[in-house]
Amino acid sequence: MRFSEIYGNDALKARLKKMVDEDRLSHAVLFVEQEGMGALAFAIALAQYLNCSSRGEDSCGECPSCRSISRLADPDLHFAFPINTSAKLSEQEKKKPICSYFLRDWNALVGANPYFDSHDLYDALGIENKAAVIGVNEAREIASTLSLQAYASDYKIMIIWQAEKMNTEAANKLLKLLEEPPAGTIFLLVTQNLEKVLATVRSRCQIIRLQPVEREELAGILQQRYELGREDAMNFATLAGGSVGRAFSLVGNAEGGSQLSDLLRSLLDAAASKSLSGVLDAADALAAQGKDRQRQWCLFAEGFIRKMLLIKEGLQEIAFADEEETEYIKTLTPRLKETFYGKAAAALDGALRLIDSNVSAKLIFTDLGCRFYLYT
Image (cartoon, rainbow, N blue to C red):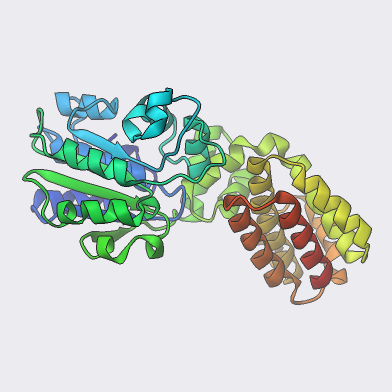
C-alpha cells in the first residue's frame, strides 16, 4: 500500500515520509485514531515506504519489497491483533491461539478494506462475541519472530493493531523489546483508545494522531467510490464524523436505511406521545435485531437527532435532510423538550458502548427507550 492510496491526512503523509528520509522515525510509533480513520493503512504504507528500494515522493510500488508488502506477503512484515479461540482452529491450536493461525483471514480482510472495525475482524476470525485480547502467547511469538534477522529488507516491522487490547502480562513481556529492539526493528502500533494502552507502553512510543477527514473531502470520496449524488454523499459524510471506515459502512448498509428509520420513528413517536407500552414495543423490536444492525441503528439515530437539532435551530441548509425527513422533524420537534437532543445523543453513545461490551440487548434497549420516554 502506498501513501497515495490512503484517503485524507495528507499533512501526516508528508510528515511521515520526511521523518523516514531524515532518519527521525522512532523505533516504536503509536498511531492514535478514531475507529475507521485508516491508521492501519498508514502503518502498512509506512512499512512499505521504509523498505522500498526506490522510493521518491512515495514508495515505488514496483520493487520486490513493495510488491510483497502490497500483497501482505512480505517475510519482514508481521502483524499482531486481538484474538480468541475459534471454530476455525484445530483442537491443538485452540489451546494456545496465536495470530499466525489466523493470517489467511486477516490478510483477506485487510486486503479488501483496511478501514475495517473490530466487529469485522471478529466476524472474519470466527470469534464472534468472545473477548479478544493480545495475550502473553502472542508476546512470546513476537519476541521469537523479531529475534531473527531480516530476510530481505532493511527493517523487520511489527504492526500491532488495537494495542489497547494487549493485556498486562503481554505488555510486560514486550517492554524491553519496545525500549531496546533488535537492530533494524520497527514497531508500529495502532490504537483507538489511547487511555487504555498501558502507560509503560505509551511512554516507549512516538505518538502520532490521525485527524478526521474533512466532511467535504469525505463526501467527494464517497461520490467517486459509490457514484452517489451530492446530497446523499454529504449526508453519509456528516454521519460518519470524519471516519472513512464508518462512511463506507454506512453506504454499504444504506439499503436497509428505511428499516432503521422506521425503528427510530416508532420509538420517537411513542416517547413523544408518552406511550410507555409503545416505547417498550419499540425497544423489543430493536433488541431483536442482530448486533451489527443495532450498532448501525444507534449511529443512524445519532445522525437523525443531529438533523432534528439543526432544523429546529433554523439551519436546514446544513442538516442534509430530504423533504420527507424535514416534514416529519418539523412536526415532531415542537413536542420535545429543549434538553432532549443532547441527552438522547449521550444515551445512544452509552448504548453503543454497552453493545460492544456484550450486555444483554433487552436491557440496553429497554433502558434506552425509557430514557427517551423521560427526555421527551
